[in-house]
Length: 420
Image (cartoon, rainbow, N blue to C red; front, top):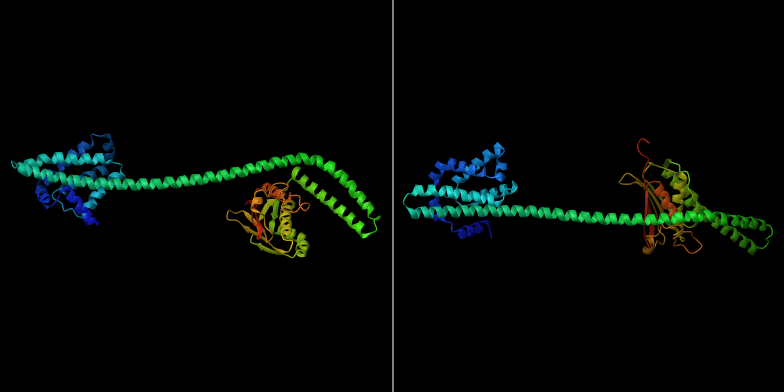
């Protein structure tokens, strides 16, 4: 329905037409003569209530109100109900909603004007009771039509505000749910780290005894194996003796790794050039990588340093590079990237094109003694040590992996503070 059709339907509902307009036009001289008196009576009525008194404390607001009310009274003399008339009535509803004036107050104002104007109409028409009655009825229809337009606008404005508040509340609810989910995930990660810390604490107690109980007999076996080298003549015997020595050395390295995790050590904190550490570690492994057909791709885009222990940082990257090499026994690509992160930290990415990690194993990859390597080829301590080193340097480490595609480790480390 168009605006004009809607207006015509409303006027038909109130039975306001040309007949009523012609009667109200005769009120123009009466309204002009008594406008100031009527507005003054309206103002005194407003001062009777605390709610409306509060709106009239500002002299400027009071003056504008009196002018608007005078103009409104004069507009009751048979107005043409067109778009301009409706727009003015809608504006009344919008203003009332904006200042928080409920409909009961301006409905009371319409009733007040009707009670004040009715005696003036009767006085004006004299003894013609029918004319007075029809004029008052026409005035009542116009005032009720005005009230209907103002109230409808008030309700529409209020509904829009409520809809806006509902959207804001829904958005706040979604944000709260997201925050709760994030905090829940963080709590789970903290719990997992706490459990890992408990396991490492147990390892520390265990290692104190293992270092002595295993280390001493291993040293004796290693010494006797050395003495046997000159006594063994055949190739098969020498091969078996070499195997014994290699396995003894492997056991010693495992014990050393356990000791490094468990025993306290004095940490160094100096500015460390990560690019130099990465290049030095790759150079140390270059022969092994080349022998396995692994191509190294370097992407360095930062010259900043971190505050840390260069030996432990080298151990961190050595563990990651060794894992990558072991994941590519038939060759592949090792990509090492150094760049600043959006947050200002230094980001190191170590990616391989190896066999990848099963999704079920990714969550526990940093746990001690967890390894995907065949039995006898890995202790499962390298990544646990790597995570500990990153944590000690105030950083973060995470992993993404797809089976058959490869694995990428992402390390974030804080740079040397300005002025340090």
